[in-house]
Structures are given as structure tokens and as C-alpha cells.
Length: 361
Ligand code: ATP
Ligand code: MG
Image (cartoon, rainbow, N blue to C red; front, side, top):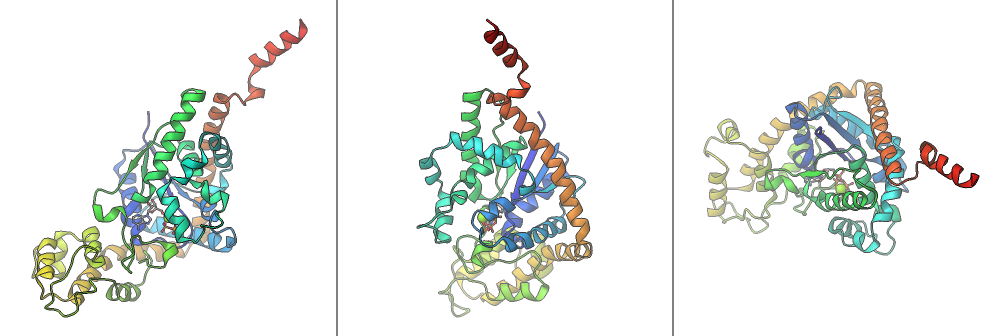
């Protein structure tokens, strides 16, 4: 059995550092590890439309943004298949059949969907497509027979839902689909990176993001106005680390070597945290350090992006070739699914012969 990755992002905006630490950075490492037979990276435009039905232009314009972010982070089209969800109609067909295997009450229990409904003020009128997107995600994952899905923590309920659908499908129709494993970030701060406003999740829809394509100045400005400890007013005040976004970002990005380069007074993050907690360390100094760390991480990404931006048609060619390849794989799975469900009438010569015999008598 080969090892296969499927993961992706919604084209609802440029990608941010939450995506980067939650999934994107890991994908590039996995891609370059050579341990995977196939890597499918999907721009989930159909899913983005489930809560942006009245704004197709937003989704359309952000496909190129997400693709540019992929390429600038180091996803390599010669090693990973980059494709657009809506170009694979087989995924809709799979979703349609999986819908019969899931109850409404099961969907209602999905904690991520619950909080997203709240965030979007959908309580009174949830689009059916949005409500059922965990099923469509199961179609995406199983269509490629993915063994491994590298994502952030908010995707745990989707993977659980997928596994349930796989088990149910296989028990009703016979072994056909594969149960995927979720691959979460090792670093706790990366599971669900908070927004610059201190809110629980950095999210395109909340406008609290640091984008990968941020210019040097924009990045600095965002970091200098980040949420810290609201009770840490004077430098000499003792400060809190928990819920202090600047420290959460340092947990996510900073390595010991950064102290050597940018903040020689401290050996490591523990020392810096201890000083902040004692009092006597100002927010500005910590933010300047974070800025140095993030600038170092994002500069090569920003530069590679500028190169790809010069050849937009080539990026669309990559997506087109990737979509064609992905479609062939999904079509093969769909054939297997239909055969298992016995809705492959024209391929089933035995059934046709048997019925012919029966009517002859
Ligand atoms: P939207 O607000 O449109 O849902 P989003 O910012 O939540 O956008 P998605 O495209 O839904 O981004 O998520 C893509 C991937 O990035 C998923 O694997 C998700 O788990 C991960 N991810 C998103 N936000 C974060 C975050 N703040 N921290 C860690 N991982 C994240
Ligand atoms: Mg999301």
C-alpha cells in the first residue's frame, strides 16, 4: 500500500501564518522527505462557495493567491499535484452517495461546523451545502485514497466524520475505501494559531491574520500592534504569558539560534518568558524580536512569490495539469465505489445475461 497525502485550503483569501504552521510547512517537509508516493494539494473552491455563494468573484480571485502562496512556500509541482476542487466533478458524485450514510443529527454535532455557523451568523439560515461540507470533505479525502491528512486542529472532527463514512461504506458495500490518518502539528502553539487580536483562531474570515505575502513594513506594523497582556501596562509590571499572542507566536516560530542572532541577552525562550513574568521587560522589545524572527522566516517566501507573480499563466497551467491528473485518480475511485454499490449496470454483463435467461424461460 502506498502512502498518499491529501490536504488543501479554501480560496477565501491569501494564506496566513496560521496555515503555514498548521499545515503548509509540514506539507513541504513531507513532500521533500520522499516518503510519500503521491501528494495531492487541493484548492477547495467548491467548499469556499458553500458559505460564499453570493460572492463567486472572491473565490475566483483567490485561487491564484492560494496557488502563489503554495509555490512560494516550496510546494513543487513536479513532486505534488496541485489542483482545483470544482474541476473534479467525481467529488460531487461521491458526496451524493456518502450523504446516505450520515444522519442530520451527526452533522449537527460537529463542533467545528457549530462554531463556524456562529462566526458567520448562519444560525437562522444555514445553507445546506455548508452544513454538509464535512461529507464533501470525506469525498475529497477518500477519492484519492489518502492515508495521511496534514491539517490544523480544527479539522479533527472532519477526519472523524470521514473515518465513520469509510467504516459505514465498507461495512455496507464491502471493502472499498481507506481510513485516513490525521497529521497534526507537533508543536502545541501551531495546532490553532490565534489571531493578532488574541482571538482563538487566526482566520481569513476574521480579519486577524498575518499573511505570508505581507511586505516587510506591513508585517512589522501588524506585529507592533499585536494583542499582548492587557494588564502589562508599565515595563516593570509582571506580565502574563498565557493568552499572550506575541509569546504564542514565539512558541510557534522561534528557535534557540534566533536568540544568538537577534537577542543575545537571553539564551532561550524560557529565559525571556521568565523575565517577562517577573516584570522589567517591555512589550516593544519582545515584539521587535518576534518581528526579526518572522521577517527571517517570511523573506524567502515573499521573494519566491515575486518570481511566480511574473508568470501567472504558468501557474494556471500547473493547476490545469494537476486537475487533469487528479480527475483521473478520482474517476477510478468513483468506478470502484459504483461497482461496490452495484450501480454499474452497463459493466455488469453477468447480471444482464442472468436477467436475459430469466426472461427467456
Ligand atoms: P476560512 O476562514 O475561510 O475558513 P481559514 O483561515 O480557516 O479560512 P482554511 O482554508 O479553512 O483556512 O484552512 C486550511 C488549513 O489551514 C486547514 O488545514 C486548517 O486546519 C489550517 N488552519 C487554518 N487556520 C489555522 C490556524 N489559525 N492555526 C493552525 N492551522 C490553521
Ligand atoms: Mg476554515
